[in-house]
Image (tube, rainbow over all chains, first blue to last red; front, side, top):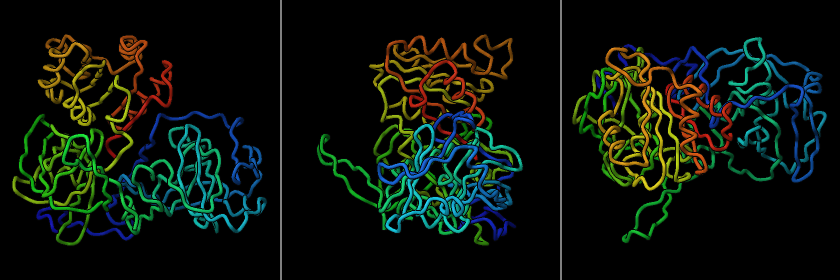
Length: 198
Length: 258
């Protein structure tokens, strides 16, 4: 259906997924108020059922190889931001120190404040998923999820959980916070997987 | 294919039939457009089939140009009813806002556009404690209007509303009438850019003093806090609420804008 008189002379930007628009600022989005966490008291836990198989402190995190990531980000609320610069640690490097059993195929990421989101394990391997602590060369501010946020730029940005505190390894996919409220289980911006059934 | 669970009303009031459906785009016909302030228009869009809606939910609107360019935006829904095929959207015209500009300037009554919804079950004002404190900035008032229209005011409800001036004090009459009618409803309005000669009410931005005074009136009553408005407004108010001692899990926020 064409809306006459809309978007004349507008052409598609190949870097912007369908239904998204270009945003120059960096909007803040979260389900609750901003969480403030001390770097020194922050840690990241990997759970296998009820067992903790790894705990990474802020100091440990800084001992992993640093990865600089230049990429576009896409928020389900329709904005996309191009050529953003991040720094963090790749899950690829973390999982070299923590072997993951083959039976696990999904993760449930959880944050300070109770937020959760589910992601297939394969989507954070091969330098596709990170624990990010710098945005635009500076420490990530609390509003944007600092000191450390999950960073999975190829999925809608609600998957890049702010104030990340750990992941639970899962054999089967389970819905996280927004997913339980009807948002898509996977969230590929290029397939416009915003809501369940998309 | 995943589905979304919807509750639809059964034949008698107490029976509800749960059915699953995929969230589809449907044709919406514009049946009314009203200017309610210099910046805000209220659009009424009618779909063929009715939907069950809750205050705080939104619909997506999709526009397509003849060159194939597509834009979508989410708008919070207002209605008099929880089950209807007519949906009102209070939409603020944003400078350089490609969608709001089209809706304000080009869209006319009886034209069609694609919409889908309702979406969002988290910022759902009906799934909460009976007593609430609502805090709105500007156009962020819209979900609260829908909520306030359904209430019987058996429990304490406070609304703190920050607007620029009298003209941008949206739904003024409706809110003032409710304030007169129900003793359990408190309306606290602050107009931050109004002429001091003609406006004798509050004129500061919502500060801890205003918040504390309202919180005091809810002392001993289990209360949930809903904050809605622009991103900075929401960030500011929710941080203040935390600072005056409100628990994180008692605050629900919805950011309008990008």
